[in-house]
Length: 175
Image (cartoon, rainbow, N blue to C red; front, side, top):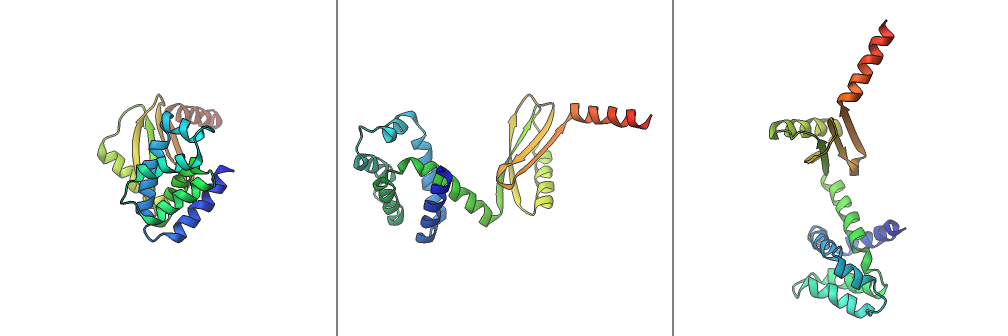
């Protein structure tokens, strides 16, 4: 439900603003601030007035903020939807990725791959998907590799255990 509402607000913001990339960056910074426990508790508190919550967010933007963004924050405050800023930022980021055809992915492995191997994997994924994919590497206890690009719905898993099982199955069937 929250995502549907966020999509409507993101669509309205996109149609009202000419500089959506900068606004998305500001909303990403606001998302980080909103996710801190102190700010989150203040936004969810029924004791704090809606006007104070809106002023708190606007003060974080500063005086040189984009007028469209300021008005957007005010509308969110009037409708008691300031807690949707992270969801709206996520929707805008997804839309911007679709427009630019650039996506972020995650590579999970036990061992760290060198830069050349990572670049080669990115190029292979680019050839397969037609999109530019930037992979970030994370350590895991997985004995193999797992590549996932959530926004494209791609998940590739190469497990040593799985290859071993398939090889044993193939040998059994051959006999």
